[in-house]
Amino acid sequence: MRSLFSLAIGGSDRFRRNFMKIASANAIAQVVSIVSLPLLSRLYLPEDFGILTTYTLMQSVVLSFVTGRIEWIIPNAKSRIQVRRLLGLGVGITAGVLCFVVGALIAFHTQIETIFDLPEISPILWFLPVGVLAGAFQLLWQSWYVFGGDLTRVGYSKLAQSIATMLLSLVLGLTALAGMGLVSAYVAGFIAAVIVLLSGRNKDAGSAMVFRPKRAVRLLRIYGRQMMASTALSVINISMNMSLTMLLILYYNSQTVGWYGLVFRVATAPISLFTTAIVQSFWTDAALLAKTDPKSLREFYLGSIKRLSIVSVPFAGVFLCGPLYIPFLFGNENWSGAGLLLMAVTPYLIGIIIFGSTTHLIVYGKAHWQLLCDAFTFTVAVGGFILIAVSGQEAWVAVAVTSVALLAGYILRFFIHLRANDLAMQAFDNDAD
Image 1 (cartoon, rainbow, N blue to C red):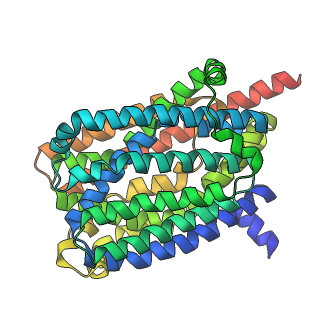
Image 2: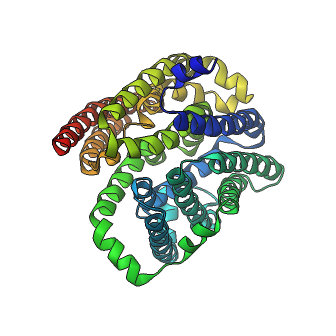
């Protein structure tokens, strides 16, 4: 039985242990999420989910640069002392960016309200600093556990986040808060995850909470260029991932945004069961193999892609059949157009399953390659959407065109990833000689 499991999952014993820890926690979390969605669709209107989708977009964009992407560097650190110092730098950068965000909200809140044109957004904007702070700490402390090679506490945090979000969403759905209730529950989920992560930290990790300016300056000299490249890559990456949401906000109504927000949530709930477990477990091993055995990393990577491709097949069938069951599942005629959007976004979702968890060039120090690839993909995807939208086509047609472009971008990054691995193997062989 154990050999069958090893064959199915692949990787090292540590990878499989971490995968099961994250996957088992995610399985419970996603069951909770999926079971709650038919209830939430009866308590909230599509416009309410549109507000949540808009808030999620804003928080995700800020989280893409708030930490300086220190959490991407930490798994490759050489010692626990270095990790603690990097975490301290991450805390300091987060504090500085949050001050900037608060200032921008105070100065430009009217303009932001006008751009997004959503009711109730004024009070919701002020949830952003809290949500970003919680999200930043979640990213930083997850990286501590990834470096340590034991993701048990990360699994617990995912479970706590899902349960807290679901319970509060249901409770607030019985009030008159509408979209405000969904946003409150979403932010509360991040806070619950951080509490669990911090409760598991040891005394050694506690000193990482202290920001020391002189040490930060030295670290910036060492890692500054890598941080800038990683942050730029992260911003492009999240822009690409959230491009459909932003474009729907700009070119279609709030009901359509709500449709997309909820069906995307339905689709990504089971997907994240695999991808979250794989990405964190994969990075734990990949960071080591990139330095010690790039050939084994290539085999590990290709094996993971093969297994994820097999996993994607039944998912694709379920997503393409969205128009048949989504209206029934959500139990309200207001959701009749959501199934078409799920069908249209299927190529992008398949790209996330197969390539999203493992095809990251940061492990080879080639973040600038991925930056160029993602920037090109983003430009093509956005251009395609705009052309379809301004021609008067329905939203699902524009989503389908953009979704295909995003999948093509993932495939392009896959081949670039293989090239980066070739160069890593050549450098490793030269050093050995």
